[in-house]
Amino acid sequence: MAIMFCIEVLSTNREMTVEEFKAWLSRFDADKDGRISCEELNEAISSLRVWFGWWKARRCMKASDSNRTGHIDSAVEMEKLVQYAQQQLHMKIYDYNDDY
Image (cartoon, rainbow, N blue to C red; front, side, top):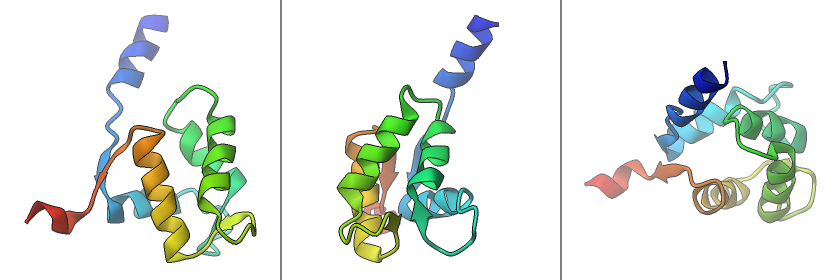
């Protein structure tokens, strides 16, 4: 059982465009208000099966939530969230326009 778990974690694909990242994140928007709360962010990060997902979600919210409302609710905050995911969660998120 432990071997199957390790193989499944290693095969997780985290490479995506910014738009795909936003679409993936919106799947965790439980109340469908267009904003991402800390709890919803925790669900998203925990789905990646990273260690201490709750702690990383809290740090991510602290780094991204400029106006301290407890939600990621603006384009600036979403850009900060993308940057945090790239730098701290080691997700490969790229802008589609950068390829051409």
